[in-house]
Amino acid sequence: MYSRKYFMRRHLITILVLLPLGLWAQKIDHTSSYRAMENERYFRFHYDNDYFAATDENYTQGYSFELVSPKLEKNPVNYVFLKPKDVTTKYGLAIEHIGFTPNDYVSKAIQFGDRPFSSAIMLKSFAIATDTIRKRRISQGLSLGLIGPGAFGKEMQVGIHEATGNKIPGGWDNQIKNDVVVNYRIDYEKQLYNYNNLITLQAQTTVQLGTLFTNASVGFNTRLGLFNSVFSTTQHKKNFQIYAYAQPMVSVIGYDATLQGGLINTDSPYTIASNEIERLTAQFNFGLVLKTKTLYFEYTRSAITREFESGASAKWGGIRIGFTF
Image (cartoon, rainbow, N blue to C red):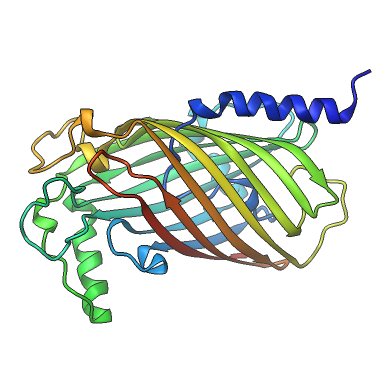
């Protein structure tokens, strides 16, 4: 008979072998197990900004409004998702908005060698299926929306800078032009280790296909603190949870419309050429979560290596606030 230690070692070796094949994850991620809310009905707001990392470039800000309810099972989009067996599934909708700027966002001139101005807004239908027997979790999402001026990235950033007394962005007229966003995403997460719900380790893989992002990801996430495991239903549930998490990811990029422009509309005034895209990147996310029976609070920080040859690494932070109902 093989020991538990042997199986643990074999899982880790398998993931380490696969790690170089990983791809980059989307900026807004709400389906990882360390962000799980245990109630079947909840609402959550998420806001990212590079202000938290004392910068104002690259991924400059993003936000999402997320709603989960059993009533959303009737959403017709859910019929396109894979249907795993022996799982508990939650269904939701989210509105997501992301914006990007170059380092010199004040100048009205095109910033050649830096990333273009771009923003996108999407309505996302998603399903999160948890298998407590096999200790795994499969999340799927289909996002429909728009990249370009119609996503009002200019109005959003200018309004925030005017309200806060910061420099007014001047280069949004050079942004990526309007194009359609149709993007599918699937995440697979497998619990590898759990010690008394004090420390846990999961392997995680993500694949995205579409007109906005085409990529895939592999990495780990770990939690340390006091928490309930989403991979178990038999445990005594804690009404108060507090824990830190960390998530390293290694990435290979297929297509990124926020850098390369839309697939249909090729009239953007400035984009990054395909041969200048960094096909291999790394990202590290970490944060602190506090949860009660009805409330969710999170502070998060992220860093990513450069995404194109003449670019630079980027950092940002964010907050999440949610409640059950």
